[in-house]
Length: 121
Image (cartoon, rainbow, N blue to C red; front, side):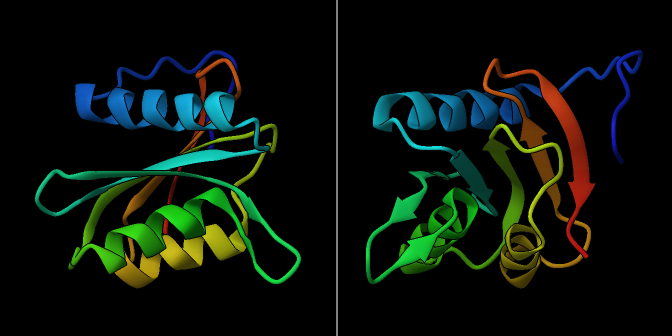
């Protein structure tokens, strides 16, 4: 679901939390994107964009990889804080790969305001 300016969405406190964590990661690390994911047990994994000469990962891809490396079996939700207006297809694919189709990816602007909630497909 893409949100318009007049849409009012009351976020679950746990969803607000992952947006706040993603925003903090972006600001703290000075990277273009910050992301956070919540696994099936409620644990969260927070990451920023990885931009090395030999490795490029979006913040969402990095957070999903951290979850997998820590033993997560599924995702409940993901959030990314970015300047982008739409979530990247690669991010939706990573969320779907671990969380399954229908897992929400919350897209927020740098101010933390929710721009879209998109189900991984």
